[in-house]
Length: 232
Image (cartoon, rainbow, N blue to C red):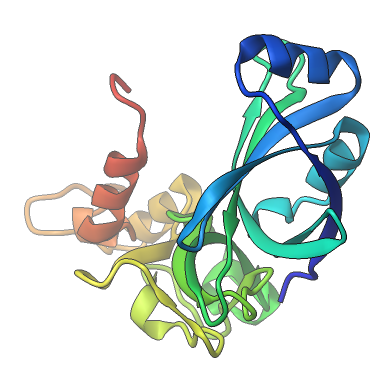
C-alpha cells in the first residue's frame, strides 16, 4: 500500500485567474477539495512541497492528508494541472474521502521472475499491453503496484486480468471482458530460426512464419489499437 502523505494547506477566499496568479507569484499553488457530500473547499499549498511530493512517483495513488486549520482532511489527488512550458503545478484537485469509501485508481504493473520464464530465456520479448491497471480500491488499501509473476511463461502465452490475484480490497474497474495485460512474443530472429527448422504452414516456403506463431493474440492487438492516439 502507498504510504499516506501529509500536505499543509491554507484556505483561500477568492477564486479566479487573478487570485490564482497572485498565489503562484508567492510560491503557492491553488487547489480544491471536493466530494464527500460537502461543499468544495478552496485551498492553496506550498509549491516546493507539492513538487517534492509529486517527485515521489506515487503521489496520484497515495492518500494525502491535508492539514487545514487544525484539522486533517483525508483526500486522494485526482488531477494536477501543469504549466505547458515549465511543467510546474498550477492547480490540484483533491477528492475528499469519506469513511469506508472506494476509489478508482490506476496502479502500475511490475513483472517479476523474468529468469524463470522459459520463453524469455529463449530470447522472447515481453510485450506489455497495459502498464497500469484500472482498479477500484478501498481507500485505506490502495496498493503501490501490482506484481505479476511470469514464471513458466512460454513464447505465445498471454497474461489476462483473470490470472491476477489482486490485493484484498481491490477489484478490476473493467468487468465486461477478460482483457490482456501482456503477451510473450518471439523476436524476428527467433521467428526466422523456427521457420528454417521446418515450422511452416500449408503453401508456405521455408523461413516464413505462420500468423498463428506471431504470439500476439487478437485481444492484445485490440487493446493496443484502442490505446493508440487518433491518427496513428
